[in-house]
Figure: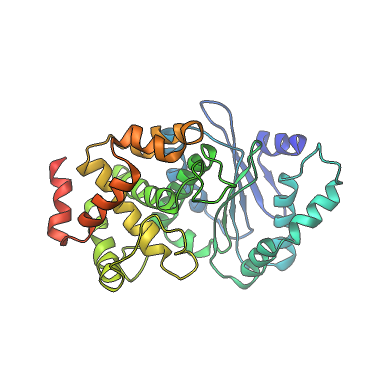
Length: 328
């Protein structure tokens, strides 16, 4: 595996299956490798606007890798399968007693991978961040149909910011454990903080109005989709931010992403905890201390007290909650 990665990281290689582009880091030479399906990035703008977000996030969170970005499309089943074979090869453990061919075969036969292959072939837009187990993590941002992404530079940059925040989060937690484990992140911490950070960074890049976006999450769900927070809470007043079951019943977008983003905003703009502390610094203490103690140390409030306090806040009117931004 190491030899294969060195080849990838030291050169720009064009093949009939995909384009592999190594992006060097100024700090510690960890590389970001783009795997782009043929015909998806004809003028270079797909990678350009993805890198606009990636470079900003790396500068903020630090450089973690290897990080493979798969920007795929539905052209040519043969080529698609070759790209996924490249993906399998990047995960090969050279020290394993299992042969390389058998490791590749096992990976390609995993149900989630087979689903991604079929989604790519059919042109369905799916994906997100995946990673290999510690200690030798490989991070992957997979977009099964990047054609729409290539048409929307704003969302392309936005997605790159969001997913790289997850890279940082995974790097500093025991992400293989259950999300209610004290050394792994809660869903709202992962998705809410990444939703907040990516929107704030988009404003820093001059691409959106952050406060307007936060209000949109309440009114109609912003770019995440309906229902927004207000409608959701009206129907589900007893929701629990710490509840990890919303992935199963279709409420994850509203609770973890939208309300989670507002929970992050509440810490920064109402509790006056420094942005860098909330988005970055406290994560370094999650494994050594456990997230409950790390949260209380850095946020100056216990998780349980925070949940109670925030729950009362988020149910207020739009005019009331938006006042936290006037205090900046």
